[in-house]
Image 1 (cartoon, rainbow, N blue to C red):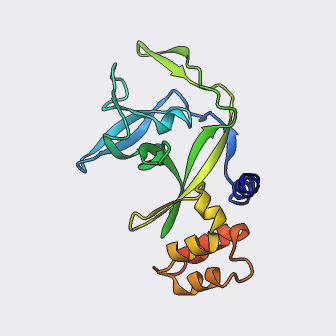
Image 2: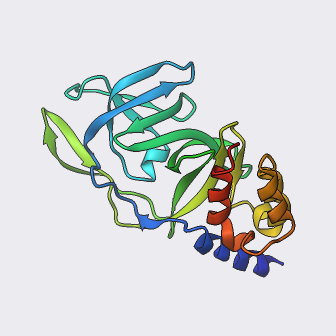
Image 3: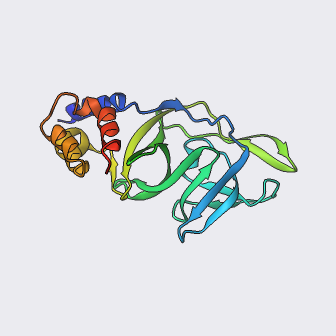
Length: 216
């Protein structure tokens, strides 16, 4: 059973197009226009230091002005979301044995059901931070280490209902889990429940597209 589950999880990763990238952002180390939304709903606009993909999931550093000497660092339990340049991160429960520890997770597609990608090191290596220069008397550091990443996809509906596609239940009970998750779109849910051609594990992107066009 364990061997079968491993095989299915590998299928899940390749089928769902999970990202395989390096731990690097092109504008890493720069302070870019952005905003944070605190848990009380307050929105603060200013500048955010661009971190690597993995580090961006752990913390966000906010500057009211681009030339400020010191910024304010926030953790996921303090902020509901933040935007840096064109990248949007939302605080979601995902880490830990029960996947209830909150982290910032990047939204990769927006719709009636949005997709988010959680990045992990493929070889479980840690990032190395390096100071590369100064700007207005402030050190600029980047944490590029060139390590390859793997991504895990998360679905989030507008009502806040979250589905972690890395969960074993999705692989082992795809028909049951997915037909229930998309139950508001009855035609789609029926196709999944009836195992119609293309509405299975290999057809996830088609399923997501149909749900987003369902008008729910």
